[in-house]
Image 1 (cartoon, rainbow, N blue to C red):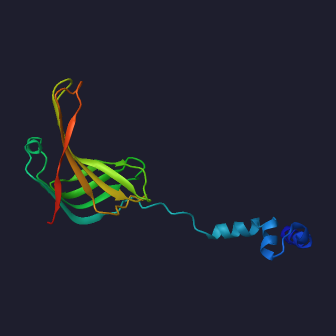
Image 2: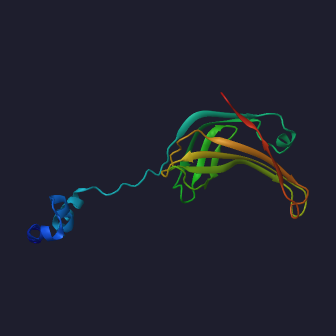
Image 3: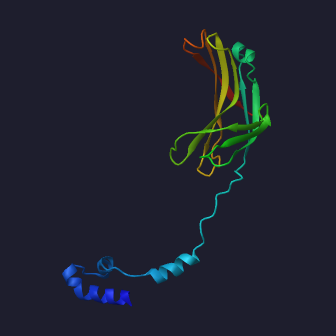
Amino acid sequence: MKSVISLLVVLVCAPALRASDFENMRRTAAFEFSGIAAQALSAVPGPTAPERSGFIFRGSFCWQRGKDFNAERMGMPFSFCIDSMKISGNIFEKPRLSVSGTGVNGAFDLKIGPPSDGLYKATTMIFRNGKGSACSAGEDAYIEFSVLTDSRGKIVAEPFLKAFYGHTPDICNSQWQYSEIKYTFTAR
């Protein structure tokens, strides 16, 4: 009943409100649709929970490095392949990347970068070996593995990696000197 009265008041006062067409008149009226809105909202299903089991990304991704004395001494794999990977858990709360393949298997903690074009860069270290103790010479070797994911944790692009070897004459007082160890993507 209130909406009918509001409509009549708007129609009578339309010239004073400078609302010449129906669209402008409708914008100036305050309609009461609470009864209709309640019925419409009850018919709409609520939001569904995102799939928590993760999405498995399958493929044959293999990498191989050249000969490198430091990488070999630190135990870096010469070659490895990943057959499947998935992100488990919520990407905003303790996400983990589970990988299965030859040379690398397991679940690794992820670091999620800020979104860019709706995608997140998820990075983990699938290999790390460090040597040295407080205030002595130190060495470090690691393979950083990254994937692009959406907000649900679905991997949307092929993975990429970078590997590094670093050393310092004194862990406490000297800078680390890092150099990249090149891994090339190979066909299985």
